[in-house]
Amino acid sequence: MSGSVRNKRKPGMTLLSETRSSSVMTEPAITTENLVKVFGEKIAVDNLNLRVDRGEIFGFLGPNGSGKSTTIKMLCGLLAPTDGHAVVSGIDVCRDPEQIRAKIGYMPQKFSLYEDLTVKENIDFYAQLYGVKGPGARKRKEEVIDQVGIGHYRGFLGKQLSGGWKQRLALCCALVHRPEIIFLDEPTASMDPVARRGLWDLLFTLASSGITLFVTTHYMDEAERCSSVGYIYNSRLIVSGGPDELKQARDVVGQGNVRLEVVCRPLVRTFNLAKALPYVDDVTIFGQALHVISENPQAAELLASDLSLEGVLVLSMREIEPSLEDVFVTLTKASMQEEEIRLSQEALQQGQRRSEFDDEGDDEPDENGGKGRRSL
Ligand SMILES: Nc1ncnc2c1ncn2[C@@H]1O[C@H](COP(=O)(O)OP(=O)(O)OP(=O)(O)O)[C@@H](O)[C@H]1O
Ligand SMILES: [Mg+2]
View 1 (tube, helix red, strand yellow):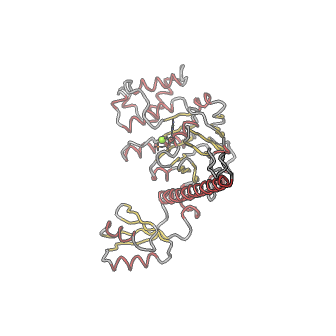
View 2 (view 1 turned 60 degrees about the vertical axis):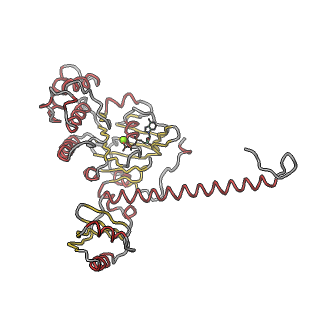
View 3 (view 1 turned 135 degrees about the vertical axis):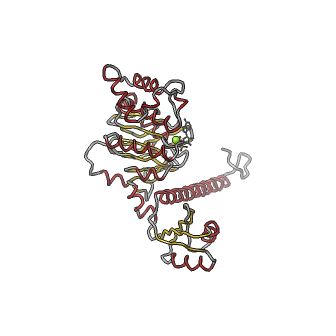
């Protein structure tokens, strides 16, 4: 199967975590080797190679439909891989998917607890499900209730909780059997900023106690909090490493690029002006400022002069480091371009093959002795 699936390793793809982690002698929490999931014609996960060390918060990022949830489901033993290998907490997911469940906690993308049970009843249910029984069970349940800070709501029904508290309840249920690894699929998707921060504080506390966290998110600020991140696009891992390493990676952000933050008024008119300048490769609005990217080392001087001629008020202009979002946008665009080139080359080759085939057919006489097209 793997032979028929595209791309073992993209040229230029950076697997920084491989070098970073090679010095870590402990057994990793998660490893995948050419992991593949195919649904019908759709390759949802394409030869994924990952390594997540114990105690890490690993951020798994990528646009909608890129394969994040499918990867998590395979790692949790809920979905059988089509090809490849994955080892989670020392257990082979293909061979012993049932055994994995005792070692991991899983918070799915959609709230999956019982809305008509109370917080306490939900926790009791999950404790039973995971075999948390006997004299220690009550103590353990109280421990996780304290850890997650949900004690005040123990008598509330699931459906009475806000989005943020629902997620805390889900985390509580995922924690009750003392898992070594927790998979959180977009845990903060519907949360306000205060609830998001609160949940992240909790995740840090869990990681500091030695639990490994595998978190998917669309939020770049959350990615920057992770100890390492992987970016998946169109079912393929494009890059992985620590957030700082990613930002600095020369081959990712492009060597020689100048990134400028320009605080100016009026913002939108200047955005449109900057977009049309020949030496500006990319420009985006970032809060009250523009982020301008150029390959021209003189970009700052040229921009200051051009904007002043247009009557723009430039309040400040400074060179900035690429944000993680810049890196991912650059990667996504590069990957889309590569994909377009690949598809057009394939179309060209198919066209050439078809015309060669037609030429061959033209040389052969048909049943009537004339020149005819070969039927397929
Ligand atoms: N059970 C399934 N049957 C068929 N196709 C599926 C199935 N599950 C996922 N897919 C497809 O696989 C691809 C990857 O889906 P997946 O849910 O893993 O993406 P995702 O990165 O989690 O997206 P999102 O950010 O929207 O949650 C998508 O094209 C999706 O339509
Ligand atoms: Mg998903």
